Length: 135
Image (cartoon, rainbow, N blue to C red):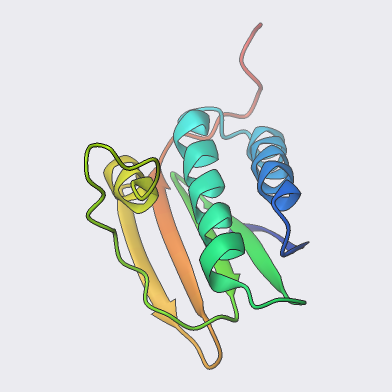
């Protein structure tokens, strides 16, 4: 049976760090120790995009994690409009590379459109251990 964790976060920059931290804690508790850095970076990028581009003022975004055997799925849902597509950031740009990083790190990536909003999701192939790694 798949493992599921969800949490709502307010439209605030501090929510990005909180989402990243709680995602890492959840993966560790579930026994997913492999690829935590990839998942953490992708959670950070998707949460940042939700806060900056996707969540209308006064609303929240939802972070979901699903652990199913050797797969971890990360979903960020917001109620805003707009399309999700990587930008063509030039070499001097200070931003605009987040979705390209997500697409490079994840094993699968997509967008599901809702009325209202959308869910941006990634899937990671990983291993799940019964015991935490030795420190």
